[in-house]
Amino acid sequence: MIKKYIILSIILTLNPSLLNSENLIESLKKQILTKGDGFWGPGGESSSWGWGFEFYDNGKMTMIFVGEGGEEIKGTYSIRNNKLYVKSDKDYECNLINLEDNLIFKLALNCSNGLRLYGYAHKSINETRKIDNNTVITMGRKRFKITENVKFRVAPELNSETIKCKFLSLQHTEIDFLPRSTVVHVLARTEDKIKIKNWNNYWYYVTVMYDMHDGESCQKDYGWIYAQFTELDSYQDI
Image (cartoon, rainbow, N blue to C red; front, side, top):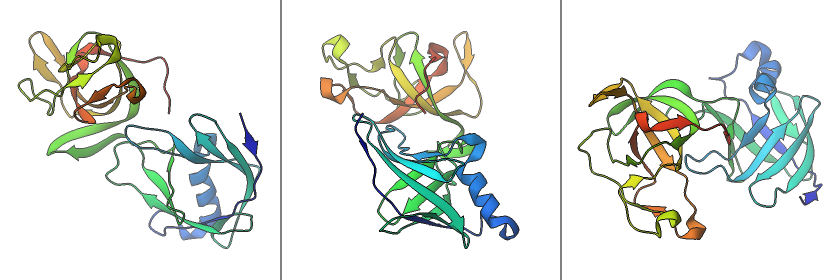
Protein backbone atom coordinates (compact mmCIF):
# COMPACT_ATOMS: atom_id res chain seq x y z
CA MET A 1 0.00 0.00 0.00
CA ILE A 2 1.39 3.40 -1.01
CA LYS A 3 0.95 6.09 1.64
CA LYS A 4 1.17 9.83 1.08
CA TYR A 5 1.10 12.38 3.88
CA ILE A 6 -0.48 15.58 2.66
CA ILE A 7 -2.08 18.38 4.68
CA LEU A 8 -5.75 18.89 3.82
CA SER A 9 -8.39 21.39 4.85
CA ILE A 10 -12.11 20.76 4.98
CA ILE A 11 -14.82 22.95 6.48
CA LEU A 12 -18.10 21.24 7.31
CA THR A 13 -21.00 23.65 7.73
CA LEU A 14 -23.91 22.57 9.87
CA ASN A 15 -27.37 21.92 8.55
CA PRO A 16 -29.74 23.52 11.11
CA SER A 17 -32.52 21.05 10.25
CA LEU A 18 -30.33 18.18 11.50
CA LEU A 19 -28.55 19.53 14.56
CA ASN A 20 -29.80 21.01 17.82
CA SER A 21 -28.38 24.54 18.23
CA GLU A 22 -27.70 24.06 21.97
CA ASN A 23 -25.01 21.41 21.45
CA LEU A 24 -23.76 21.96 17.91
CA ILE A 25 -20.19 20.81 18.51
CA GLU A 26 -21.12 17.62 20.35
CA SER A 27 -23.96 16.91 17.93
CA LEU A 28 -21.65 17.28 14.96
CA LYS A 29 -19.02 15.06 16.56
CA LYS A 30 -21.63 12.39 17.25
CA GLN A 31 -22.79 12.57 13.63
CA ILE A 32 -19.23 12.13 12.38
CA LEU A 33 -18.21 9.44 14.90
CA THR A 34 -21.44 7.51 15.42
CA LYS A 35 -20.83 4.17 17.15
CA GLY A 36 -17.09 4.68 16.73
CA ASP A 37 -17.41 4.29 12.97
CA GLY A 38 -16.11 7.56 11.58
CA PHE A 39 -15.79 6.48 7.95
CA TRP A 40 -17.50 8.53 5.28
CA GLY A 41 -16.96 7.04 1.87
CA PRO A 42 -18.18 6.25 -1.62
CA GLY A 43 -21.66 4.87 -1.59
CA GLY A 44 -23.07 4.27 -5.02
CA GLU A 45 -25.82 1.67 -5.11
CA SER A 46 -23.73 -0.59 -7.32
CA SER A 47 -20.18 0.44 -6.35
CA SER A 48 -18.22 1.31 -3.22
CA TRP A 49 -14.94 2.37 -4.88
CA GLY A 50 -13.45 5.84 -4.55
CA TRP A 51 -12.14 8.31 -1.96
CA GLY A 52 -13.40 8.49 1.60
CA PHE A 53 -12.64 10.25 4.89
CA GLU A 54 -12.08 8.41 8.15
CA PHE A 55 -12.36 10.57 11.28
CA TYR A 56 -10.93 9.49 14.65
CA ASP A 57 -11.90 10.57 18.14
CA ASN A 58 -8.40 12.01 18.78
CA GLY A 59 -8.77 14.78 16.20
CA LYS A 60 -6.96 12.95 13.42
CA MET A 61 -8.31 11.78 10.09
CA THR A 62 -7.22 9.86 7.02
CA MET A 63 -8.31 10.28 3.43
CA ILE A 64 -8.51 6.75 2.04
CA PHE A 65 -8.94 5.44 -1.48
CA VAL A 66 -11.29 2.45 -1.35
CA GLY A 67 -10.25 0.12 -4.14
CA GLU A 68 -7.11 -0.99 -5.94
CA GLY A 69 -4.01 0.77 -4.62
CA GLY A 70 -5.43 1.69 -1.22
CA GLU A 71 -3.75 5.10 -1.10
CA GLU A 72 -3.93 7.06 2.18
CA ILE A 73 -3.53 10.76 3.00
CA LYS A 74 -3.11 11.75 6.65
CA GLY A 75 -4.60 14.89 8.24
CA THR A 76 -6.16 16.37 11.38
CA TYR A 77 -9.49 17.99 12.15
CA SER A 78 -11.00 20.18 14.84
CA ILE A 79 -14.46 21.52 15.63
CA ARG A 80 -14.84 25.22 16.44
CA ASN A 81 -17.25 28.02 15.60
CA ASN A 82 -19.85 25.42 14.66
CA LYS A 83 -17.63 24.04 11.89
CA LEU A 84 -15.36 21.07 11.32
CA TYR A 85 -11.85 21.95 10.11
CA VAL A 86 -9.14 19.71 8.68
CA LYS A 87 -6.07 21.97 8.75
CA SER A 88 -4.11 22.65 5.56
CA ASP A 89 -3.23 25.06 2.80
CA LYS A 90 -6.65 24.64 1.15
CA ASP A 91 -10.21 24.90 2.38
CA TYR A 92 -12.95 22.56 1.18
CA GLU A 93 -16.47 23.26 2.39
CA CYS A 94 -18.90 20.39 2.96
CA ASN A 95 -22.57 20.36 3.88
CA LEU A 96 -24.07 17.62 6.04
CA ILE A 97 -27.28 16.61 4.28
CA ASN A 98 -30.22 14.36 5.09
CA LEU A 99 -30.92 11.78 2.35
CA GLU A 100 -34.66 11.29 2.34
CA ASP A 101 -34.86 9.14 -0.80
CA ASN A 102 -31.56 7.22 -0.69
CA LEU A 103 -31.94 3.44 -0.47
CA ILE A 104 -28.69 2.90 1.46
CA PHE A 105 -27.67 5.89 3.60
CA LYS A 106 -29.35 8.51 5.79
CA LEU A 107 -26.58 11.13 5.84
CA ALA A 108 -23.97 12.39 3.39
CA LEU A 109 -21.28 15.07 3.14
CA ASN A 110 -21.56 17.24 0.05
CA CYS A 111 -18.16 18.84 -0.57
CA SER A 112 -17.16 21.80 -2.72
CA ASN A 113 -14.61 19.65 -4.57
CA GLY A 114 -17.43 17.62 -6.11
CA LEU A 115 -16.99 14.73 -3.69
CA ARG A 116 -20.05 13.25 -2.01
CA LEU A 117 -19.31 10.99 0.95
CA TYR A 118 -21.79 8.77 2.75
CA GLY A 119 -21.88 8.02 6.48
CA TYR A 120 -21.29 4.29 6.82
CA ALA A 121 -22.63 4.42 10.39
CA HIS A 122 -25.86 6.01 9.14
CA LYS A 123 -27.42 3.21 7.11
CA SER A 124 -30.96 3.48 5.81
CA ILE A 125 -32.51 0.30 7.20
CA ASN A 126 -36.22 -0.44 7.65
CA GLU A 127 -37.13 2.88 6.03
CA THR A 128 -40.11 3.11 3.69
CA ARG A 129 -39.29 4.20 0.14
CA LYS A 130 -40.84 4.08 -3.33
CA ILE A 131 -39.34 2.37 -6.39
CA ASP A 132 -41.42 2.76 -9.56
CA ASN A 133 -44.62 3.07 -7.49
CA ASN A 134 -43.73 -0.03 -5.45
CA THR A 135 -43.57 0.53 -1.69
CA VAL A 136 -40.34 -0.99 -0.36
CA ILE A 137 -38.45 -1.35 2.92
CA THR A 138 -34.74 -0.48 2.75
CA MET A 139 -32.17 -3.09 3.80
CA GLY A 140 -28.91 -1.11 3.87
CA ARG A 141 -27.17 -2.69 0.85
CA LYS A 142 -26.73 -6.23 2.16
CA ARG A 143 -24.62 -8.72 0.23
CA PHE A 144 -26.47 -11.95 -0.69
CA LYS A 145 -25.67 -15.07 -2.70
CA ILE A 146 -28.02 -16.79 -5.11
CA THR A 147 -28.72 -20.37 -3.95
CA GLU A 148 -30.61 -21.57 -7.05
CA ASN A 149 -30.96 -20.13 -10.54
CA VAL A 150 -33.46 -17.29 -10.23
CA LYS A 151 -35.13 -15.01 -12.79
CA PHE A 152 -33.95 -11.38 -12.80
CA ARG A 153 -37.01 -9.21 -13.43
CA VAL A 154 -37.94 -5.60 -14.15
CA ALA A 155 -40.74 -5.56 -11.55
CA PRO A 156 -41.64 -7.63 -8.46
CA GLU A 157 -44.13 -9.77 -10.37
CA LEU A 158 -43.98 -13.36 -11.56
CA ASN A 159 -44.90 -12.42 -15.14
CA SER A 160 -42.73 -9.33 -15.31
CA GLU A 161 -40.20 -8.86 -18.13
CA THR A 162 -36.84 -10.54 -17.45
CA ILE A 163 -33.45 -8.83 -17.55
CA LYS A 164 -30.72 -10.54 -19.57
CA CYS A 165 -27.11 -10.90 -18.35
CA LYS A 166 -23.82 -12.42 -19.55
CA PHE A 167 -21.37 -14.21 -17.26
CA LEU A 168 -17.90 -15.62 -17.87
CA SER A 169 -18.84 -18.91 -16.16
CA LEU A 170 -21.45 -19.47 -18.88
CA GLN A 171 -19.19 -18.44 -21.78
CA HIS A 172 -20.96 -15.06 -22.01
CA THR A 173 -24.17 -16.69 -23.22
CA GLU A 174 -27.06 -14.25 -22.79
CA ILE A 175 -29.42 -15.56 -20.08
CA ASP A 176 -32.44 -14.12 -18.29
CA PHE A 177 -31.65 -15.53 -14.85
CA LEU A 178 -28.95 -15.18 -12.22
CA PRO A 179 -26.97 -18.42 -11.84
CA ARG A 180 -26.40 -20.11 -8.53
CA SER A 181 -23.57 -18.50 -6.49
CA THR A 182 -24.01 -15.09 -8.17
CA VAL A 183 -23.48 -12.27 -5.66
CA VAL A 184 -25.98 -9.42 -5.44
CA HIS A 185 -26.42 -6.35 -3.27
CA VAL A 186 -29.93 -6.21 -1.84
CA LEU A 187 -31.04 -2.60 -1.49
CA ALA A 188 -34.66 -3.11 -0.49
CA ARG A 189 -37.51 -5.60 -0.26
CA THR A 190 -41.22 -5.47 -0.93
CA GLU A 191 -43.38 -4.31 1.95
CA ASP A 192 -45.20 -7.66 2.14
CA LYS A 193 -44.34 -11.26 1.37
CA ILE A 194 -45.73 -12.63 -1.89
CA LYS A 195 -46.92 -16.22 -2.26
CA ILE A 196 -45.60 -18.08 -5.31
CA LYS A 197 -46.46 -21.79 -5.57
CA ASN A 198 -45.59 -23.25 -2.15
CA TRP A 199 -43.29 -20.38 -1.15
CA ASN A 200 -44.12 -17.20 0.73
CA ASN A 201 -41.33 -14.64 0.63
CA TYR A 202 -40.31 -11.09 -0.31
CA TRP A 203 -39.14 -9.74 -3.62
CA TYR A 204 -35.66 -8.18 -3.35
CA TYR A 205 -34.57 -5.10 -5.28
CA VAL A 206 -30.95 -5.81 -6.18
CA THR A 207 -27.90 -4.83 -8.17
CA VAL A 208 -25.73 -7.64 -9.54
CA MET A 209 -22.02 -8.00 -8.79
CA TYR A 210 -20.34 -8.83 -12.08
CA ASP A 211 -16.87 -8.28 -13.53
CA MET A 212 -16.84 -5.89 -16.48
CA HIS A 213 -13.15 -6.68 -17.08
CA ASP A 214 -14.22 -10.24 -17.92
CA GLY A 215 -16.91 -9.03 -20.30
CA GLU A 216 -19.77 -9.67 -17.87
CA SER A 217 -22.82 -7.41 -18.03
CA CYS A 218 -26.57 -7.04 -17.48
CA GLN A 219 -29.10 -5.10 -19.55
CA LYS A 220 -30.15 -3.11 -16.49
CA ASP A 221 -28.21 -2.18 -13.36
CA TYR A 222 -31.13 -2.85 -11.01
CA GLY A 223 -33.91 -5.39 -10.90
CA TRP A 224 -35.96 -7.79 -8.80
CA ILE A 225 -35.43 -11.38 -7.68
CA TYR A 226 -37.52 -13.64 -5.47
CA ALA A 227 -35.90 -13.91 -2.02
CA GLN A 228 -36.61 -17.64 -1.66
CA PHE A 229 -33.48 -18.40 -3.67
CA THR A 230 -31.00 -16.24 -1.76
CA GLU A 231 -28.94 -16.36 1.42
CA LEU A 232 -27.04 -13.69 3.34
CA ASP A 233 -23.35 -13.74 2.44
CA SER A 234 -20.90 -14.24 5.32
CA TYR A 235 -18.82 -11.37 3.88
CA GLN A 236 -20.28 -7.86 3.90
CA ASP A 237 -18.27 -5.18 2.04
CA ILE A 238 -19.88 -2.11 3.63
